[in-house]
Structure formats: C-alpha cells, structure tokens
Image (cartoon, rainbow, N blue to C red; front, side, top):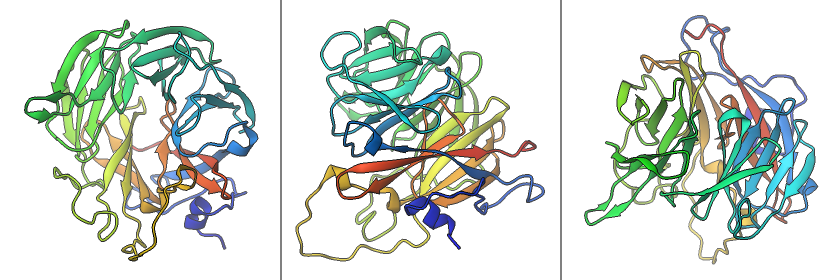
Amino acid sequence: MTSPRDLLRGSYWPTIGLLLVAPLHAVGQAGPDQLTLEPLVELQSADAPVVPSLHQSIVHAGDRGNGSFLVSYLYREPVIAVYDDTGSFERLYDSQGEGPGEFQFYPKLFRGPEGSVLAFENGRLHRFDGELQHRDTRTLARRVFQTMAALPDGRVVVDDMPTTTSGSTPTFSVLDPTGDLDVDGMELADPMVRTLIAPASEGEFWTLRGSGILLERRNADGTVVHGAEVEGGAVEPWTTGRIEGEGRDVPRRARYTGLADLGDGTLLLVAWVAPEDWEPAEESDEDTVLDPGLIDANQEYDTVVEHVDASSGQVLADLRVPHALVTVKGAPRLLHSRHPVGDVGHVLTRIWQVRVPPNGL
C-alpha cells in the first residue's frame, strides 16, 4: 500500500479521488471536522519549451472556466508558462525587455482584484487580465519586497525591510493604485522572518509574522482593528536569527508560510515544520556543486495546514503531510508541491485542494 509520504515525495500520482491525512487534532466529531487534501491536477514542465528549476511563484487565474495556472520559474529566462485547468501546457508568455509588459528578470506573480494577474520584477508592477493581456505597468515606491496582497480598490500591501542607520527594521507599506506610498513603513513587533499578508473583506487585510503567532486584521490605513494569537497551532514563536547548525545538526524551526481568508470567518494557515523522520546531515569531505536545476529543499520540511477561527485564533482542525507545500496565489484552498524529474532540471508540479469541514465553526 502506498503511504501518504510516498504520494507526496515519490513519483507516484494517486488514482484515488481523495487523499486523507490524519489530523494533528480536531474540534468536535473526528470525521466531519477533519481537513482533507485532494489531488487536483499536475503540471509537467517537460511539456513547456523551457527547462525550469525552482518555482518563483504559481498563480491560479480563475476567470476562465475553472481557471488556468500561471507559473514563473527561477534561474531561467523571464517568462510565464500557462497551463489549463487540466494541467496541459497552453503557451509561453515571453516578452523580454524594458517596456510596459516586458520582463528583465523572472517575475513574482500575485493575484489581483477582478481576476487580474500582477507580475512584479525590477521595481515594476505589471498588471494583466486573466488571459495575460497587458493592462498597465507601474514603477513602485518600494522596489524590494517578499510578498504582497492586492486590495479590491487597486492598492497593494507589501512587506519590506528598509535599512536605516540603526539597521533593518521589518515593516509593511501600503501603495496606492499608481504605485506611490499611501501608508509608509509601519513597523511590526516581531523582527524575524517575512510578513504574511492576505486581503480581507471591506478593503482590510491580515498580517502574520512567519515566526510568530499574532494575527492582526488592519484597516485601510494599517491600523489594527482586531488581533488574536493562534491557539493550538504548529508554530512556537521565536525571535532569534538562525541558530548554529540549524537544518544540518538540529531541525529547522517551524514557521508560517501561508495565510488566506476563506471569507466565512475562518482562515487557512500553512506552516512548515521539521519532518518526523528528520536526521542530522552526514559529514562529507566531497565538494558540493550547487546546480539550481537539481535543488530540492522540499524534504527539509513537512507541512501543517490549519483551519483557524479568525475571531479567536483557535485552530479548529489541522492536518500534517510530508513535503513542503506552498500556497497557490489567488486560490486560498490550493497548495502545490514540487518534484524533480530526471537529472535535467524538469519538475512535476502537483496541485492539491484542501477540503475544509463545512461545520468548522
């Protein structure tokens, strides 16, 4: 019998309709309150005219049928591969240059309002419709950031870490629809790891530090209107930098990597934790050549998905799966996993759907 770990880490693609992973804990009756993970579709990079390495980002553009998947890859030409909702490769958006809608570097992709797709690269934000027809290009006041959330009114919230005379202080900023600063550099209490940002209703947004458990809902000017600590989650807060030997001699610490508002008073959080079968790395005298096409950090983590009450922060249900799963932009309930194929740098991307209990609250 194929184990859940083999399903995610191996090359086997399940033919069963539903993959059920045992929850860490659940509230109420065990059956109805369990989260489940369902295999949805797989994307083969070998079908596209590029040889990728790592994913830069994946966006679900849901305004055409069931929606296509747009993939940007690291360490390759700045292009976007388009796959349909069955996983078949459709086309390549390959427009390189310095003009509007043209890329100089591989873009970070995000989902915008009204089915739009946002592509950030080289300090510019390109806006496309769901068919990748270019709408406009803006130069942003914040040229470097890790993550962003687009609000319905056209503003975007970004995390940044501007360097001052006293060092680097993690903040977030709100940019107006033209790309200029609207709310400048509001500090966050937790100094470590990037900020997770997710749009909420009524033009508000959520923030959560990856190394912390404090959820904060903020209004249009960044003021906190509600806060709650995640209760019973997988992450223990930490505020120090990487500890000596972390990832080699001792397991990596758990951290949140995904945050989404489900629109029903609940949130979906994604955390990376050390694998249950983690072992210290073996010493080696051999020189290691870093080949981006062969990098596979996924086995350094397991993933915990948590269904959380947005008001109290209480974890209602969760599940733990092997492999480092990553949120698909623009689709709160979709995650993706990456699996190297052969030795030429191709990857198999598997898209998974999280099934949330209907009676979670």
